[in-house]
Image (cartoon, rainbow, N blue to C red):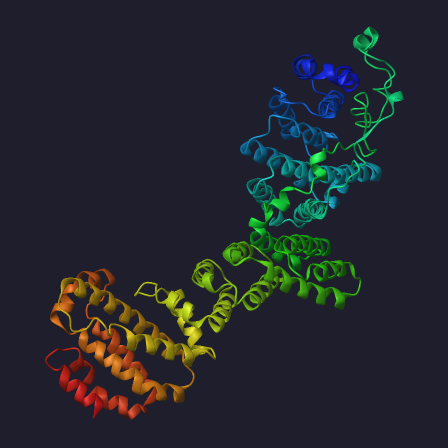
Length: 620
């Protein structure tokens, strides 16, 4: 296998593409199938595929050339990775996949996803360093294994960079972080730490590439080599074809890649294509910015991780994202943001804490309004499986976002409220979510109230708790006043008409008034200030009585009968009468409410014939 890859490295460029597919790569894959795959064979296979891939890239302009065996080579490596135990993965396999992925034909979205999933599973699922040390017979073996895994994570980061460059779409970026999300939210702290290390590498490289400008000089990684590196002119001598070029086998892995094609490669062994140095990188085309809100939400909960390395890397990742987003939005304070991110390296804890707070505010201000729900969904998802320290980080991020972005998210308030409401139904962090709804209502009272009134007439326990929490808050009387105004306005332009369409409108108005009245009842129930409630009585009681009287009409009751049966409401006027009873109970002394019971006021108000007498007794 190494002989074939050596031939590929030293073959003349004009002859390589005609024979590299079947004669070279085909024979390498055939030999890997025919022999038992011991460690030496696997190492030879990895090195051979890497060298052949580098040789093809060194040709330069390959025109329409496509390596037909690319998918088979990729499957061979991935199948081997899946079967390998965690402590026997050969170094260099991710480099082989990286170089192979640069060749045409490009991988499909499904193939990219499978490649990412297999490689992340292989690298990030290793036991912790303490467990690895316990399983090793010697300290040296444990250190070597730890070093191998660290290099594997670096290579995984380079592989992800290459995949992002090759596809250059937001879908690919989304797929990368969808795979990493499972590890970033892992219950095992060492898996989170490894995933964050890879994430830091990828985002750091993306940030550098975004800041890169096209240089007139060729990049250092790809420069013409001296003619002395190619000792033969024309075709390769026959002895080279028969036995392989001398010196190839003795060179360190991948350091001789593409040497024969007239190009020199940096000592790191990584072969970077010219596209890597173009200023038109995927990030500058706006690919990851579509996921900015989701990424911030995913990383935000990790900023208070129990591992110091985890929360430090999470802040670094957020710093990279912030700088890229500020550059794409052309924020005038981009230089200040860059200086702020550099302060994350400060050893002083107070400076670090202040910097983190400032970065949180800056990041929240850079979240587009259209991605507000994506951000909240991503960060609230972590509430379902985080420890208390990370839950505190979630609360901090949500509160700062609602305050800092209050002006930008006006159009998104209904969606944001629905998102908070949905997590109330599946989370044990209800006080925090109620507080978040309060903050949202403080800045957007009318949209929040209107959205809450869109919910079913039969309120579930979460909706009842929302109304009552708002009633207990300092906004309680303002919310009640808003509800009273809505009740007074409801149906003013529809009463007194007899046409069929208007009757249907009247049905809708009745449902609207019933919902408002239910909300009023819950707010009044939790209201702390009776003095303010008394001032609203002249506006509130007439409306409640008016609609209680409207619900007694025979035609209206028949029209709404199907709705009442579905909602298990036999007499809709009782909802209004219950609200009146509750309001008066809050404002009147107990002896007066008992007197109303003795007079049978509430029973009279439910009967159409006795209703006028009930109104007279109530208002005397």
